[in-house]
Amino acid sequence: MNFISICSGIEAASVAFGPLGWKAIAFSEIEPFPCAVLAHHYPETPNMGDMSKFRDWPEELFVQADVIVGGPPCQAFSVAGLRNGLNDERGNLTLTYAEMINHADAVRSLYGKPPVIVLYENVPGLLSDKTGAYGCFLAALAGESFPLEPAGGRWTDAGYVLGPKRAIAWRVLDAQYFQLAQRRRRVFVVASARKGFDPATVLFEWDGLRRDFAPSREAG
Image (tube, rainbow, N blue to C red; front, side, top):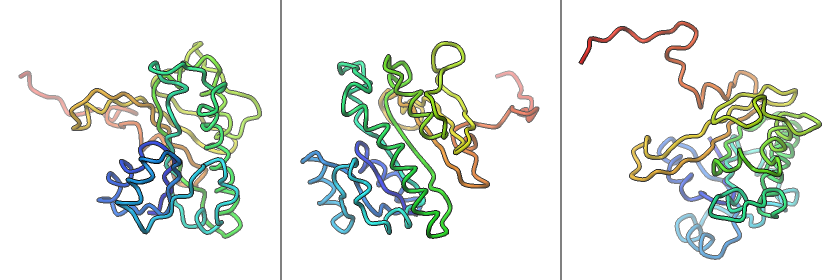
């Protein structure tokens, strides 16, 4: 599997996916220090720089990319930042990421390739953003004309949307439960228009669902 890694968490994605046989074919980073780190560890992988310039990137990149991993800057949604959401140019990169996915699928269609798989990551503050960033992001991915609204007045920590363009699943996960010695909650979004691929099977456990109950256990 080939992937393009966007903004924050680029090297982490490369380290995590490498043992699985995945290969980063391009990065998109503009900050000097991360750029230097990438150039040192991955000298043969091109850094495309500003993600908002994706329409100028070679079509071959999107043709080769099976997955686009994105983690646009979290400051616009983080409690440690000003939380200006879409009013912050960094927050608007979330919508730019969705535009990139649409562009990638359009290019891949011309070459007879299946749609890309989307893996997006950000802080949980994205779900409670007052500018409606998450509803706009979901709508852009799903193919809806207007921002989506949460049924209960707020976005839950896990959910699923089936739109005219893509299926989307999201879930908040904490790094402390995945063999990391830190509490680090992040919302992960998986989406795709690819036939035979259901994002829910990636983020949700199916044991106990649809009457598939685990065997009885003796009391400890």
